[in-house]
Amino acid sequence: MKKTDNIIRLSDRPDLKELAAQWFSSKWSVPKEAYLESIEDSFSAVVPSWYVCLDGEKIIAGMGVIENDFHDRKDLTPNVCAVFTEEEYRCRGIAGRLLDFVCRDMASNGIRTLYLLTDHTGFYERYGWEFFCLAMGDGEDKPSRMYIHQTECNKKENIGSMNEKTFNTPFGTIHYWTNDMDNARRTLIFLPGLTADHRLFDRQVERFSEEYNVLVWDAPGHAASRPFQLEFSLKDKAEWLHEILDAEGISKPILVGQSMGGYVSQAFMQYFPGEAAGFISIDSSTLKKKYYPKWEIRILYHTEGMYRMYPWKLLVKQGANGTAESEYGRKLMTDIMEVYSDNPRYYASLVGHGYRMLADAINADLPYNIDCPCLLICGEKDKAGDTKKFNRKWASGENLPIEWIPGAGHNSNTDDPEHVNSLIDDFIRTKGTRP
Image (cartoon, rainbow, N blue to C red; front, side, top):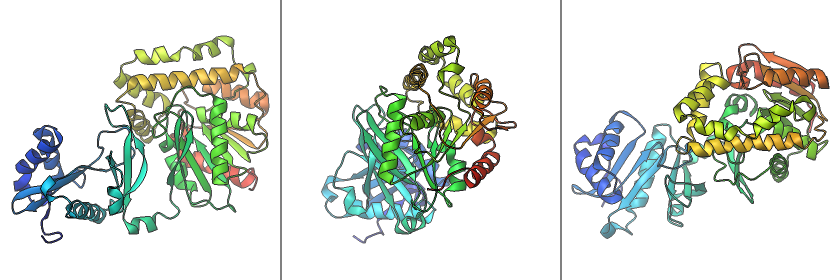
C-alpha cells in the first residue's frame, strides 16, 4: 500500500458516510446515527473531522477528531477518538500513518495541539504523543490516560506561552500553568475564586505574561484539579501553594486573588510571613473575625443544601448573572460552570466545602495581617453576598487603599479587564517589591 493514497478524509468523500458510520458503530457500540450526524457535521467544519483508511473500497482503519471524547477535561480539546485498525491489518504501521495524517491535516487548519484519551500505555508514544495527565471518562470508575500531540512548529511557537504542570498532594493532583520563568522578573500569582478556574484570569494572563512571570492554578477540587478529596483546609491550600512556588523557584511573588483566591492569599501571608511582595484583592474580603457578625459565619456552614435544591440550568444562569455584568464575563462564567454539568451534586459539594473551609479559617481568629503593599479592588455592582460592605469596612478598619470598578460585578476583572489591568500594572510599578 502507498503511505497516504489510501487515507481518506470523509469530508472529501461524502459518498462513504453511510459505510463509515456503520463501520465505526460496529467497532465502538455507539449508534450509527450518532456517527452519521458527526460525519455530516464535518462536511462544513474543521472539528469534527473523520478519517478512514481503505483497502480498495473496504474500510480497514479509522479515527475521528471531536471536541471532547466524553471525559471531564473539557478544556483539553480537540480530541482524537475512535482509533481502530482491523485485526488482520495490524502491525503494518497503518495506525501510525493515520495519526500522522490527522495531525498534519489539523495543523494545516490551524489546530496544532491534539489530545487523546486511552487506556493504552506504550503505543501512542511511538508516534510522537506524550502522556499529559489523567482524566475521568464519563461513567467510568477509574481515570484514563490523556495524551497530547503538538506539531514541531507549534512547540517552537509556544516558547514563552503558558505551560500546564502538576503538583501531587495526598488528596489529589493540582494543575497549574506558568509561562517561561525568568528569575530577574517579578512574579504574579493569579488565584481564582470558588468554583472558577484558571480561565477567570485569561485577560490578565494575556496582558502580563510577556513582561512578568505568571502562574495561575485550578484550585484543588476545581476543573482540571480533579478528582480531589474535599477534606482540606485553607491552611492546606496555602501550604500547597507555597510548595508549588518552591518547586518553581519563585520568591517574593505578588498575590492576585479573586474572591476565595483573596482568602488563600491572606492564609499564605499568615503562615509564611514576609514572603509576599504584594497583595491585590479582587472582589474578596478579610479573614479577620472581628468584621463578621456571628450569624453570617454560621450561615457559611449551611450553603451546600441550598445549592443542591437549585435546578442546574437555573443555577448556571444565576451564577453567571450574579457574578458578572458584562457579556464576556457572563459567557465565561457559564462556560466555567458547565465543566460541572455532568455532576451538579459535586458542584454543590465543592461550594459547600469552600464555604465551610472559609468559616473555619475565620473562626480560627488568627491575626491575618497583611505584611506587604496591598490594594483592594471591588466592582461597584458586586452582588455576591455583602462583599461591598465588607470591603468598605476592611479598607477603613485596616487603612487599606481601595479602587471601585464602575459597572462591574463580583468578577470585576472579567467585566472591565482594561481598568483592572491598569490598576495591577500601576501597583506593580509603584508598590510591588522587586524579587
